[in-house]
Image (cartoon, rainbow, N blue to C red; front, top):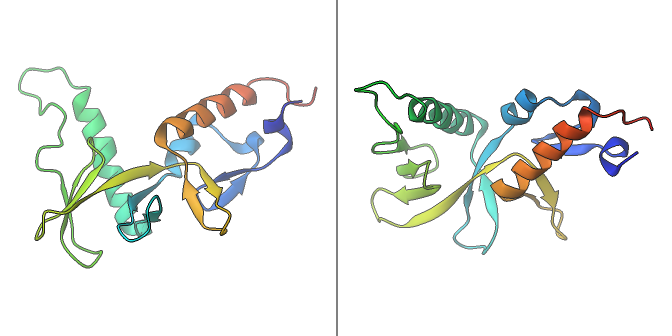
Length: 149
């Protein structure tokens, strides 16, 4: 069989074998991250509560973007999401994947983490969203094949 059938996959904070994953469960275990300013290239996770709030806003915006009725709200990300639980008030522009400090105007990037890897220092970091999408697609496709062969 292929490699996906013989190894567990690190997803969110738990390890799932490929037998237990569905496309729906892949999206349900995401965690939002922000790029650290002090450590180049490192993303830190939001709290579970904040991450759930950001994901809810993201999903609601996606649904609104799909509405085509006259008078619908379009993309639904006008003004972004205000989040005040990480020490200062931040405005999150989900579609643009940006977080802006309301007081200073400093911005940093956001990442919707679904698949993670361990760096050489053992710090778990999310793969890029494009890589995560390819991994999810490959895993769901592999799941549809007979993995015992």
